[in-house]
Length: 314
Picture 1 (spheres, rainbow, N blue to C red):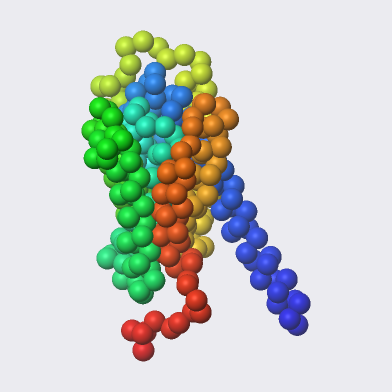
Picture 2: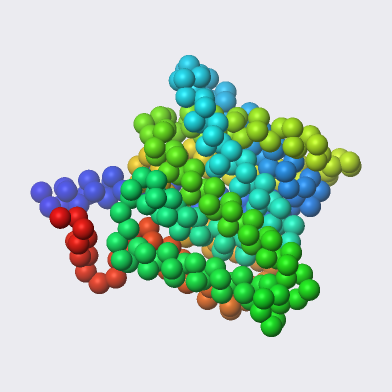
C-alpha cells in the first residue's frame, strides 16, 4: 500500500515538474530572442509583434476546441490578464534590454514571485508567516545590492548608471505586473481552460499594443534575424509557454507558479554566454543567490527547520 501510494504521488507530481522545467528553459531563451529583436524593432513593436504571433498561433487551437463562446463570456478579465501578464511586461523588458544584458534582466525577473506573494497576501489574503516575510526582505535586499553595483549609486557605477537604474526599474515594474496578473487569474479566471486564458490574453495584449506599436514602428524594415527571433518569441516563448504557465497557476497556485523564475536565470545566463558573448560577474551570482533564497522563502517553497504550524491558524 505504501509503494502504491508513493508511486501514485510521483505520477501525480511528474507532469507538474515537467512543465516547470520546460517552461523555465523556454522562458530563459525569451531574453535572448528579445535582445536580438529589440535592437531593430524597438521595445513596443517587439512586444506587440510577439503577442500578435502568439495570438495567431493560439486562436485557431482555441476555436478548434470550441472555446470561442466561453472566451466571449469572459473576454474582459482575460484581456486584462493579457495586458498585465504579457503586453506591458514584455514592452518593459524589451526597453530594459536596450541597456542591460539578458543575464541581469533574467536575475531581476526572479523577483516576480516576491511580488506575487505580496500581491496574493494583500489581495487574496494568502497568509504570510514569519519565514515568508523574511523571504520578502531577503529578496528585496538582493535586488538593492544588485542595483547598487550596477548603477552610479555605487563607487564602481559608470556614467550610464542612471540609464541602468531606469532599466532595472522597468524590470521590477514588469515583475509587479506578473505578480498582479497571477492573483487576478486566480481570483477571476480560476477553472477556465489554460488554452482559453493563454490565447485570449495574447489577443487582448495584441489589441492593447496595436496603436502604440504602429506609432513607434521602425522606419527601416528589420532584418531576417530579428523576424526569426520574433517568430520564436511568439510561438515558443509565448504561445506554448503560456499554456504551461496558466496550467501551473491552476494546479499550484499563483505564488508557486511564479516560482518557475527560480530556474529561468540559469537558462538565460547559459544562452547569453553561449550565443551573445555575455559575461557573468561573481557579484551577480551572489545577488542572484540571495534573490532566489528570498523568493523561495517568500513563496513557502523553502521552510527553515521543521515545519511549524502557523501561530495564527488556531
